[in-house]
Amino acid sequence: MLNQDIVREATRLTRAGQLVEATALLQRMLEGGSAPRAESHSASQARLPRLDPLTIDATANEVEEREAPQIFPARSARRRRSLPLDGMRDFSRLGLRSPITRAPLSPSHIVPEGTRFIAGAFSNAAGSRTYKLFIPSRCQGQPLPLIVMLHGCTQSPDDFAAGTRMNFLAEEQNCFVVYPEQPSGANQSKCWNWFRTGDQRRGGGEPSMIVGITRQIMRDHAIDPKRVYVAGLSAGGAAAAIMGATYSDLYAAVGIHSGLACGAASDLPSAFVAMRQGGGFKAIADSKISVPTIVFHGDRDTTVHPKNGDQIIEQSAKATRPTTKVLRGRVPHGHAYTRTVLIDGAGRAISEHWTINGAGHAWSGGSPVGSYTDPQGPDAAREMLRFFLEHSLGG
Image (tube, rainbow, N blue to C red):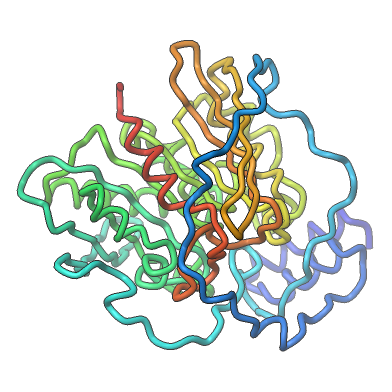
């Protein structure tokens, strides 16, 4: 069967609700027609070392500064092999693998002492979503920033908060953080449906519920309307890119970890292609949005190809002709990284792209008590929050 025929058949199976069969068919195509290899039990059960989250090396040296008529050159055309499906019979391949069995989280893993983490819900014509809201201890009625955090597949707000430690950083900086929750009823693996055209538009689908939660928090609490931000991991990172593109009048900056650009896919078959080799450039070329964006991506990510990080930055900076500063450093006893900063004509950093050497598909610098984290840094949550607070709407 030719690739075109396989894609058509997979699309038909998807529309018929036969996701298992569609996924298997696409995987065979992407693996060159061979049967998927099963991940070994020992590898799937391996734990990350229990290390404290590390911060970046503050002594990183600037090694290059030049004008950038092209934001990023094309990556090597060398074929990159992706890991096969790991036995999940659902959408886990579109984000994260099944969580490793671990001990239940305690409140001390999720929030600092003396703060609140409360549950809420939002409903509109598109549906309903629950959420968890972090309220800092120094909240006394003054307008504060709000960060919207979109979890990856199979994760929960508590798990994502524990893994990123964003609540602890938000307590330091006196910020609210809200974690919308994607239920299994909307996606079997609790992935945000970033690859569906109905969930890539303003005013409908999942974006309308995420923005509805955002605005509900803004109504119910003292939030600075010029300092509202959105971030996410994997499928949540792709959803964050959509939120920045569709609601650039609300979100002042976007953080995307191991995700994909808005419009990188329009259905299940194109989602697999985008994850394997990067999204289509048509979606990027058609975008007229320019939102400050910070991206983290491991250069050994075999779930979402690192080229997607390049495409996110290209999309976010399309309206400008920035200069580029490239800085390199290493976390002590951890990963080396390259930090590429795009600077506009007024001298403002409009985008940052952190490429983490040797890192896979996991939140950089996170805590091992959460799922899908790499404690060997750099600390993505701290750097995202720093980048966010450097930007405000109209600022």
